[in-house]
Length: 300
Image (cartoon, rainbow, N blue to C red; front, side, top):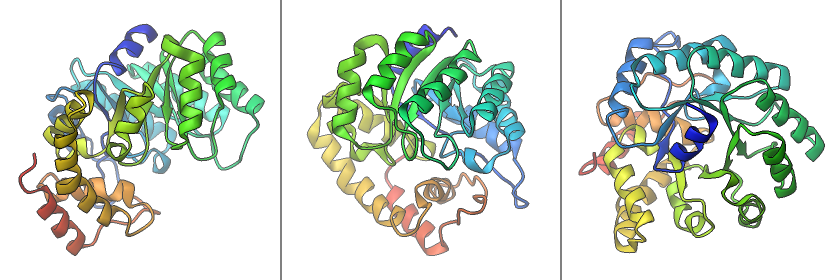
C-alpha cells in the first residue's frame, strides 16, 4: 500500500485499534489475537491499528510490537494494518523498520518517551521516522508530543509519506488550525479517548473519521454510530450516547488506565475474553464487568 493509498483508505471509514491478547502469564497469546483480528476484519472498517494505545504498545517490547503486527497481517486479508510506533527517535526508527519488514501498511507515531520537546525537536523526531520508512506515517498529537500547525505544515512539505494527523488533545483551536494550514494534503483522524463523545464537533472541523475502541466488542454499534455521525443523524447518535456511551463512561472514569482496561473488560462481558491487561494497568472488577455486560445487552 503506497502512502497515498493509505491516506485515501484511512479517510474512507471508521478506524479501530484492537486490544493485544495476553495469556494468564501475561505473554502474547497469538492464536487468540489472530482470531480476534479475523473477526474484526469481517466488518466494514477502513483500517486497524495493531499494537496501538488500546493494544498496550506501552507494555510491549519492540520485538513484541513487530510480532503483534506480523500476527495481524497473517490473518487480516485485505484489511490494512497500521502499526503503533513511538518512544525515542532511534527506537522509533527501529520499530518502524521492523514492522515494515513484517508487512505493515503504515505507522501511527505515538508520543515519544517521557520528556517534553520544542517544536524544532518534534520536527526533527517526526522527520527522522518518516525518512526511515517508505510507509505512510500518521502523527498522533497528544500528551507530551503536540506539534503545532506550523510544524505539521513544515513536516507535510518535507515528508511525502506523512499522510495523516490524529488528534488526542481535544484542543479545538489547534486542530482547526492544522486543518486550515494543511487542507487536503493530510487525512485527519479523531483520537480522543472514547472519541464518539467528540465526533460531532470534530466532524464539523473536517475531521471526518476517528478510531473507535468499542469496535473491539460491539462492532455493529460502533459502525451504526459512525454512519449516524456522517449522516448528521442526531436522533440516532443521541439514542446510542444515552443507552450505551454515557453508562460506559461511568465505568471508564472510575480508575486511571480504565480507558484501555474497559475495552478488554468489554470483550469479557460479551464472551470474547482477551486476557488480562499488563501492569501498570489493572483489570476491571467482576462487578464492573457484569455492569458492562448489562450495558452491552441489545448491542452487537
